[in-house]
Length: 251
Ligand code: 6PG
Image (cartoon, rainbow, N blue to C red; front, side, top):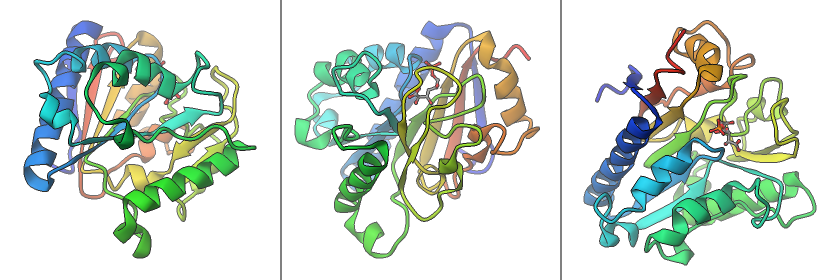
């Protein structure tokens, strides 16, 4: 796949998108495990990934042996406990992680039990540095095999919201962000652009007409990353694939 040109997969509906995205996640797993003996996968939050998670949890897509070589991270998190209905980790545990044989020691949720989202961001950066010691020692961002992302109707991705101070963080792997204008109105913790753009593969999952304007702006280059933060995701040496349904592709 051409590393510079985004690939756009327009799917008839959310079921078709989930199937295509699940196959893509599994394909990246096979590539990573074949080449490096392990798979580092970053999950997205929000609601869109739930269907894809459900299909990934089916044995026919990813063998148990591949799950045992998979390491799971999170692109962002709401500063709420894991039991909170708004927790991205809670969603992933319910829809995927509790249904596949990925070892618990290989799942790295963003800690939200610190005194602040800022402290949680520092703690997660420390966890990443321990998992990627060479990158940390050389002060280069970790290169995840696949980062899944969503798109908000305001063009945010992960918890990189328009106007957020996290947009300008270039010297840390993880940052905190105040709530964006979209719900839920809680502080966030998010991977930063340097990490997102170091990925081997990035895949956006986008459904719904309410995302169409933001998607058009990002794909057609109409907006800077300050206005549509997803526009700032341009992997330096990786692929970017957009899985969108017909509603989101309407513009
Ligand atoms: C979050 C997400 C966020 C999400 C988009 C789309 O924590 O909310 O990481 O970036 O991907 O807001 O959310 P939906 O999939 O629910 O539309």
